Image (tube, rainbow, N blue to C red; front, side, top):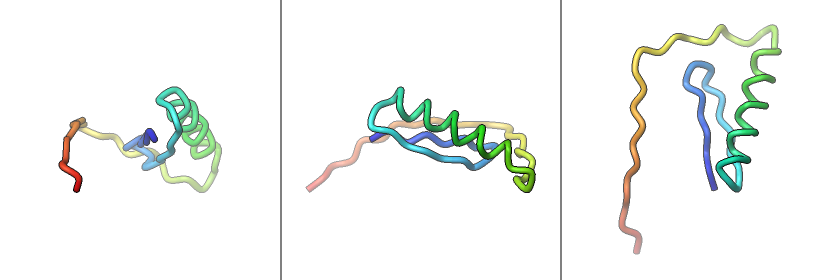
Length: 57
């Protein structure tokens, strides 16, 4: 499972593969921007991306 999130709009989506998640987030962002009642995307100053590993029982 892959999850995609676009921080300026807050839009999120997912997919079974990375390519599917990317296609789904593109479609979700386009739908968001087509909505006349949607908030204007907010500019962002800094993005941090991290990968973490956790132990599972």
